[in-house]
Image (cartoon, rainbow, N blue to C red):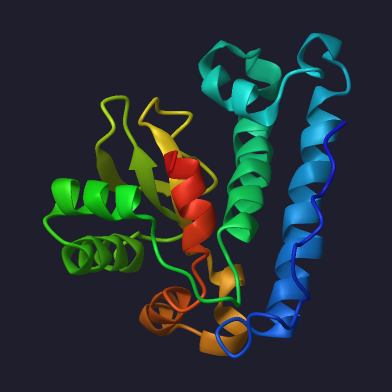
Length: 200
């Protein structure tokens, strides 16, 4: 059985960038709902219950059709949000020298990476996510996915930075002003964790 992970910070810790009410609803209700529905989908399929959510998503196309979409949506929602909470922090941090170097190699500069990520998040039509992924050759790539899809499903690399651009992530505070929410995101990125996920 999958469980809703506890936040590593208080609901109000990310204010004014993400407000307490949004944080509580987003974590407890939205993420909690994905966990509940994922467990429900797996109830009649004990052969999949001991797999990690990462394994389920990497094998999504081989799952029985009867549960594939439920696992895609709810397993994706569980993985995506679990990563998202981990790369947020009220404490200021900087990317490691190794990550900074990789960003420079892959994008030209940190500013150009930030511009590309911001644009990718802003132009994701409808609901979805923006990602920074580490590819097999160690290079980095920015991409986006619809709904609760993620790079694991598409064999696109290991996600190390994620931004939720579903409206439920920002609508109470920012309404339809997604660009303001994306700009605020850069103030609460836990670069220590992102660097750790990168491998340095």
